[in-house]
Length: 123
Image 1 (tube, rainbow, N blue to C red):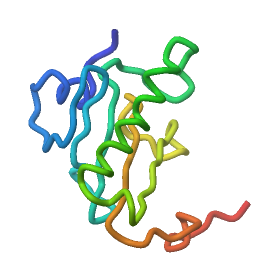
Image 2 (cartoon, helix red, strand yellow):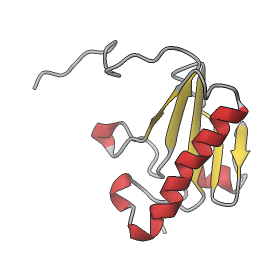
Image 3 (cartoon, rainbow, N blue to C red):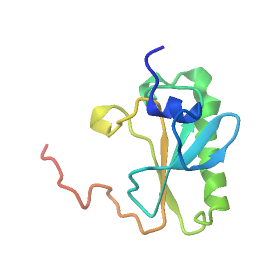
Image 4 (cartoon, rainbow, N blue to C red):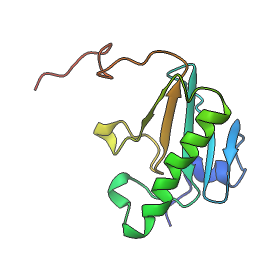
């Protein structure tokens, strides 16, 4: 296995994180660089580098990330108002840690398209 990611170290409690949810398959914690009033990351305890590395055997685990997102949204009171889930893939997709993770953003009206307030690249 390649060297540990920051998420591996959080799972193993080598690095502190503000954990909001944990079960046998996933861990969720507050993002250290929040992009919304609520910005959580949900990570599988099994490292899968990118969406491109998900295989058939990971189907239940990846679905469990969304089940955890729903549970967290209900527990933390933002399910009714709404929230966004995002998973980035590779550099152009905005992935910076190569251990898949589901972003959960809430606590404000989230615009669409997501790049509305940033500079669009010409094609």
